[in-house]
Amino acid sequence: MRPVRRDYNGDFNNRRNVNAGNRPDNRLEMVFSCTMGNCDLMETYKTLYNKVYSYQNIELAYKKARKRKTTKSYVIEFEKNLQVNLEQLSQELRDFTYSPNPLTTFIVRDPKTRRINASDFRDRIVHHALCNIISPIFEKCFIHDSFANRKNKGTHKAIIRAERFVKRFIVHRAVRRGGANSKTVCKGYALKADIRHYFDTIDHEILMGIISRKIKDENMIRLIKMILNNHRTKANGKGMPLGNLTSQFFANVYLNELDQYLKNEVKVENYIRYVDDFVVFHKDRYTLGTWKLMIADFLKSELKLELHPEKSRIVLLKNGITMLGFRIFPGNRLLKKSNTRRIWKRMNKFKEGYERNEISEEDIMKSINGWITYARFANTYHLRKRVFLKYKEITKPKKTTVVNSWRVLSALSCPLCSTSPLYGP
Image 1 (cartoon, rainbow, N blue to C red):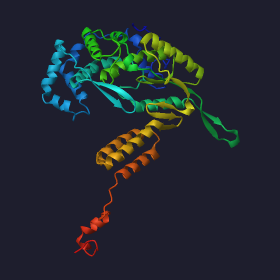
Image 2: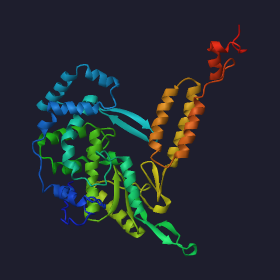
Image 3: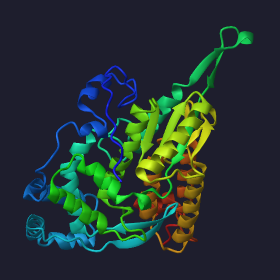
Image 4: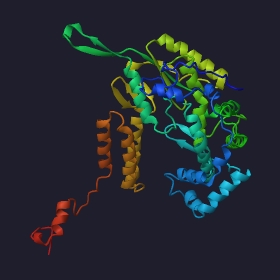
C-alpha cells in the first residue's frame, strides 16, 4: 500500500508548514526543506550504490561501528586482519555476493523488558555505510521537531524544546489584593501519545514505497530489502529489529509521514516527536481530542499503525507531562518517580554486592557517575546529594581492632612520634 502523496502548499510565510517554531531561520529552511510528498518533485537519486561499497565509505563506516566498542572481542577479532576484512566486505557488496549473518537475540530489562536483535559486526559496518549515503538525502525532508537519532538532536534537545512549548501557555494574571503582584497560570493541554508495538508493526511495503520515492537505484533498494528481510517475525513483511542503526533511521523515515500530515494538513504548530513518542500542545482540550481521532485514522489507513490505548491521553500542562524519563512542569523539570525508585534499588544492590566482595568501588563509582550525568539535567540537587552520601556509606572503610584512623597511621610511620604509646618498643 503506497501512502497518499501530499503536496506542499508553497506558503513560505506560514512557519507551521515545516518546522513549526519561531526560529529566525525557518523561512530559509523552507526553501531547502520539503514534505515527503514534495520530495517527489525534486531530485531523485539513481546512482548511489557505488558510493556505498567504496573503500573510503566502508572504512568510515567501520570507524563509526567500532565507536565505544573497541574492547569488545568481536571488534578485536575483526581488527586482526582489518584491511583484508574491509576490502572483502567492499568486494562482496560490489559483486552482489554479500549476505547478512543471522541476528543475535537477547533480552534487556531496564526498565522494560525488550527483545534486542543485534547484528554481526561486519553487518553493522554495512548499515553505517548505507546510512552514510542515504541519511543526508532524507535529512532535509525531516521536520525540525523530530529529535531521535539525528545529528545535533537527542533527548536533551527534545526536553528543552518541549519546555519552550509549555511556556507558550503560561499566563501572568494580576492579583488585585496584592497590589502589583501577579501569579503564573499555565492554561493549556497536551496530547501525549505513543504507537503500539511500533517497531514490530512497521509495514515493509509501505516503507519501501516511501524510500523508493527518493531512491531510484535498484541495487540500493535490493540492499535495503535484504537488511529488512534478515529480521524474521511472525507476520511476514512487518517489523524491524531493535538495536540496528538502519531500524532507527527507517523508523524516522516511516513516521515522517505523520509529521508532514500534522504540519501541512492539520496545521499543528506545537508538536514534538522522539521515535514513536510524540506530544501535541494546544490551549483547547476539544481541539486536541479532534486531532487525536484524526491521527488515529491517519495511522491506521496510511501506515497500518495504531495508537497505544493506555499511553495516548490528554493531560493538563499544569500537572506536568512525562517525556523521555522526565516530568516537565511549567518552570520545573524533575525525574520520573519510577527512575528515582530505580536508583535506590540499584544502591541497595550495590550495598549487598560490595559487602560480599562481588563488586568493586570503582564499578559502583562508574555507575553512579553515569546516573548523576543523566539526573543533573533535571532539578535534582538534593536527590543527587543523597545518592552520593549513600555511595559514601556503602564504600566507607571497614573498622579494624588495631588502627582505625589515618592520623594514627601517620604517627606510626613518623620517627618523631616514638613517644606515642602505640609505637611500642
